[in-house]
Amino acid sequence: MSEKVSVSPSNQIPQFEKVRPTSLTADAFHRLRKNKAAMLGAVIIVMNILVATFAPWIAPKKYDTVSFKDINGTPTWVTRIFSNMKPIEHGGYVKIREGYLLGADNLGRDLLSRIIYGARISLTVGLITPFINLTLGLLIGLIAGYRGGWLDNVTMRFVDIMYAFPTYLLIILLMAVFRLGASKLEPGSLGYFFSQLDASMGGLLFIFIGIGLTSWMNEARLARGQVLSVRENDYITAAIAIGAPTSRIIFRHILPNIIGPLIIAETLAIPSYIAYEAFLSFIGLGVNPPTPSWGGMIADGVVRIQAYPNHAIFPALALFILMFAFNFLGDGLRDAFDPTLRGRD
Image 1 (cartoon, helix red, strand yellow):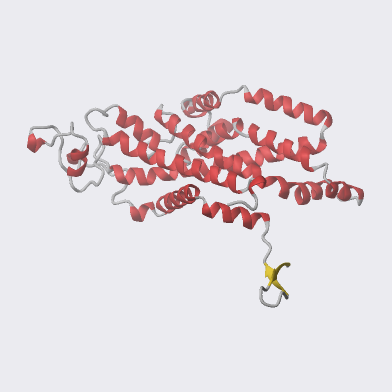
Image 2 (cartoon, rainbow, N blue to C red; image 1 turned 45 degrees about the vertical axis):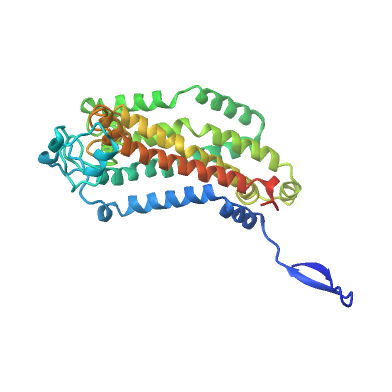
């Protein structure tokens, strides 16, 4: 506990006031709480997580419920926003259906319910993929940076090769082999097993594998650079001198001091992972229908965007808000944990 000296103007007797010290983490979270954009992003992310978790209770209808009489049905308030959408009662083509808050798609499915369930796909990709990348990149970067020598050179050259391999191409190849060619796979084979596992996961398995295999390189390079810096510190030298095992040095002394920047970097990359899934669903290689995905909904809505713009704009708006929320939170975390800002507001 540190002390601050103050002098009373009446008797000039020094008085001591106790000042509670703050840790680096506490100081960082104090700055993070004062960042309004980051807090707004965190609130939006938490709200999306809650909506995705309780989707069966929040969604007004099931995402796959079809009502042919309500195909392309639209509530009145939507027709007032989009002037080209004129109701049939006023000489237009739009069927008014007040029972659908955002409207119904070309199969009569509730758009709001499908957007709510679609949050599950985007959040699953946005939360599980960083875990895979962080695990792979951190492990490879720790070993390469700590061991150094030929192992470091070989590992970094492999990272350079992987950098040249495009994520979308790898995922498309995986889809072509295991999903599109599933009928040609022999039951009991490894390919057949992965194909069935992908089907049970709604088509997310190969998205995870493709993004995980091509996005860990940034984490590996960042982890290696952090290790090269930290391993020269005195406490690492002392741990080596007393004979501490390598695993203890890495996971007890090095890892806690480098994990912060890696988590922040991965948080900033989450929007790109969500964009991967949205694009793949947009071109028809994402999740399996009728499972709703914002990218797939946008692709379906683009075909009819002139007649029914709400089919594409509303899921695109949900995707836009979630991606910017992760961007705001990532920027806030980066600024909060920047050691050069310690002690500043």
